[in-house]
Image 1 (cartoon, rainbow, N blue to C red):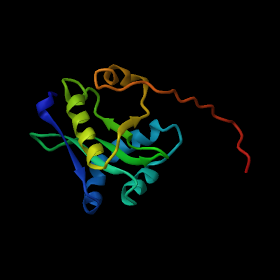
Image 2: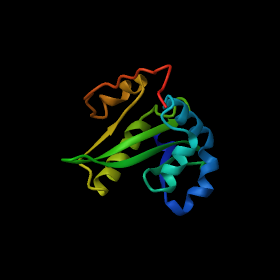
Image 3: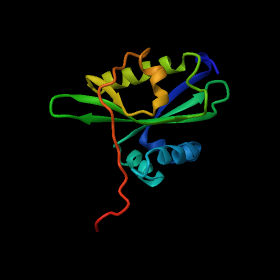
Length: 151
């Protein structure tokens, strides 16, 4: 798929219901990739409460949805950042320059929401894109799963 063949569209809250079936399989993948941090129901709730903004990734010619990403404006004590919370697409769709096109959309959305930067937590595979898009690795996340949780 080439850069010219893919596009993104922000989904207003009033159109969420009709678009949820189009991203259901991607929501399943996104929830799985959170390692138990959230479920599909949690993700859907975040869209309907306005915490997350839903963006579809689709093939321009056919209008077929091939993924989504979710963004959240996050307030820190000294700045506001646009956070890419989830991004799930068909394998290979970030090739051929689409990642740069998507980055432009994200930057425009961040500026429109008065954010001074963009952040995201990504799997190791994102490293091949982050340098060319101007991201700098600021930290790492460590996780340890406990076998027993106190009630």
